[in-house]
Image 1: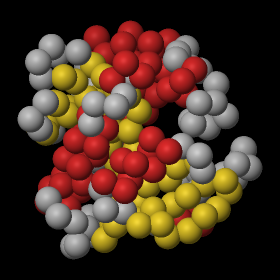
Image 2 (image 1 turned 90 degrees about the vertical axis):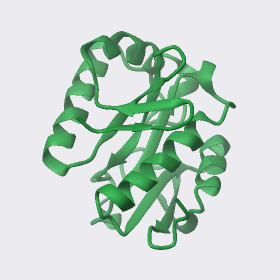
Image 3 (image 1 turned 120 degrees about the vertical axis):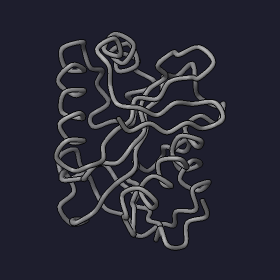
Image 4 (image 1 turned 60 degrees about the vertical axis):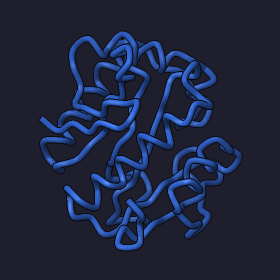
Length: 177
């Protein structure tokens, strides 16, 4: 089982008891504001998503980690790697992303988990490049992206929803673990 420990976090595969806390995160309008069309997700949608994320692990050898606090074993969201098939112009590519419950924002958890995920991409999965895609205006994600050392590669538009996107990238041979 793939696990990564940081000073405060455990990044791991998904467990059955992660469904309810992840569904709570997906039901928060503040969290979902910058995701797809901004709508919240219910328990059934969250269950389908977790199942899909686990399938991606099996198919691709990487995926979205459940992120929990080491101190309390509380699930705080996810971070990880995925193939951004919704943006064909960027293919082939692997993207890093994260989603944390709003009560965990502003504490450095997203940056800590994302940094560990980039190390995983380089050292364990042998990837040489990772991108990050965010909506223009999502300043919190832009801050995390900057802390990772990623640089703006292009601006584009979401192919379904039409809003502006920024694509940042990092060559993992230059990533400072």
